Image 1: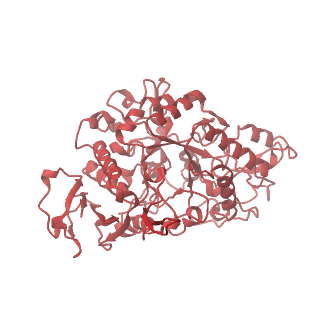
Image 2: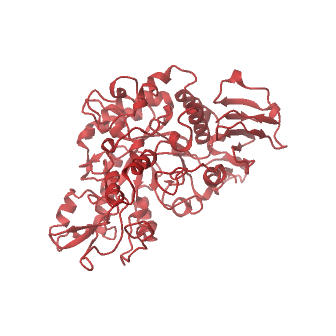
Image 3: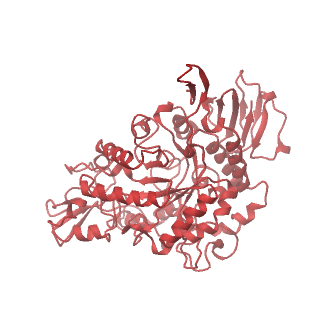
Length: 579
């Protein structure tokens, strides 16, 4: 798999150079900020845009090139900003349009790009369009949403929502139901309506004119629905029918994305990223293929369920080959024309990387660095989720009243109130699976509220902030934070880590993940021990590891032994060699 090709001089017909299709969004390192939890500048307990401005130098020091913001538009916050009531304004708690303009300007001064979350599958039920839509069936905004009459004295069908409960909400004004595949306060748009699409494109243009460098399109593969509204199959232990195939990855979605790309992003200056559940490395090309002219990258869900048992309150051992290698290497081994990919473990819809994939107890630092080593040495754009760079963990001591996610309480009604599970098991499950684990305040220092706010935080701070925080790690050369900085610097230095070929070695090893990156004669070997045992790495015959140069390791260099063909690795050990 070649990631470069020879460029031919059109006039002379001679080879000029090896040409790589370079893009800023391929080479940069991105950092996702859940704005509500990052930094509060005014003491109201909610993170805001001015708080981000205050921390831009920290991000620059870390080595960040791209900042991705979760939704910042005006919202009543039923789903923490993913229910938008005004697409052209800023959420009151986050600041003002002028604050956002300043954030853009200050970021660009530091050569950092801004990617904005674009939520266009649905709006808030408090958006003026929906307020109009529910007034009567003849209202011009009625068709901006999906309305249906009931059936047999109930909803139009048995679809459940992703957040628990029915996907339909009854509205007595017109005696019909509206569709919401997420919260009932997030009515889904009807993308078949041309006027709606025209309005949404104007909104995107508004933010492009503000200087936004790219967009992450939330739930973009859900924007088309199957209007037959057939019932879904009810699985054992479930209350509602399985509705995924009726609302996800339908063929018409591609036409809508192409329309947006052609009309708004033809210059190539911006990047367009989609959130696409139900897509993996085998079929991602339908959105990112170079011939598709749709998306540059997609956020998938391949790593979300790793380690999850059959029930939320159960865990199962990670199978390195099936859970990690097949997925991560699968993305790496795609053909160039199938598209680029983001490199990420976590986001606002998952739990903390370290608690899900590593060891957040005895080998907290080692496993955090090991996971980072994989993330920064594979082909794609690394996306750090805020706090991962200091090893933030799940909030294991949360009680039910400490959670804020609407899905927690909806599913409580579905599962606990109906006696399907006990509250005890449900709470254990939340400590493993709740999205709120990844939404606790950024841990800046060991002062009250971890330095996040001088007021009362909107959500409880993780109790381990006294030990795990930025201040503790800034001056510690061996900290997780400074290991991230070294990895980012190495990636910036070695183009092979961005554009190079990927060749996995010892693929059947159940404890060690190893591979070679290669570009224009430069080769880099990466070896990681994914678990807490001490396995032996055996170098293939073609690798003269005794002459290899150790570039970086997550153990102190003075602890390294003289290299031989067989290397006994320490728990969660990671090594990067120049061959």
